[in-house]
Image 1: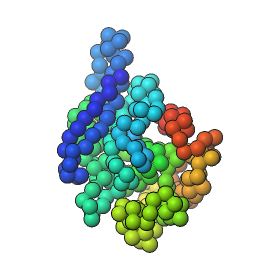
Image 2 (image 1 turned 90 degrees about the vertical axis):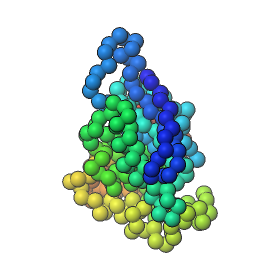
Image 3 (image 1 turned 120 degrees about the horizontal axis):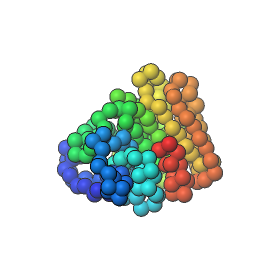
Image 4 (image 1 turned 180 degrees about the vertical axis):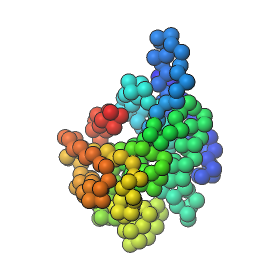
Length: 252
């Protein structure tokens, strides 16, 4: 398993950024096989709030899981900005992840350019980001996975205001009274997407997680609009024990 740490200047963010890339090539070396010319299937894997591109490597066995499944994994950093495009700050995280990062990593590494070989996943804030990018850019991703995702932001404002002050959230999403029905409202995007063009979705949340009701509600909306969604719940809270287990289900 090769773990590649990469730094480059992003045109979408107008600054240097760090990413980690997992390439499952160890078995070719140890077994003295020639590395296949066939491009790797790829998962773009997003971190949660307060995290960065190192979280999945530091707190889960993602390297082993990716090796077992022969899948490349690309892990970017997105500060605490929820993977949204912010015209006021010029931080275009949606375009950075969904366009620039996909194209750059495909050209730099031996990654498949096919939609059917490309998925996006994330936890908590990253679950929101993965879901939003999958809904906005269905031509890029064949499947989307959210673990303990913040999937009903407009319906959960009271809970969010207990975590951070109003000014923080408005710095990301703009005026909170305009969030519902906007491009940052996942429920709105679910209602707008053409089900025939949408990717497949996998949603998982712990039964002891405070976000479980919001996940249940989001999945109900997805089913109502005939999206292809698998929803699985299990014991656990909003923690790495849960995510380390369920990322394996994502890869399956």
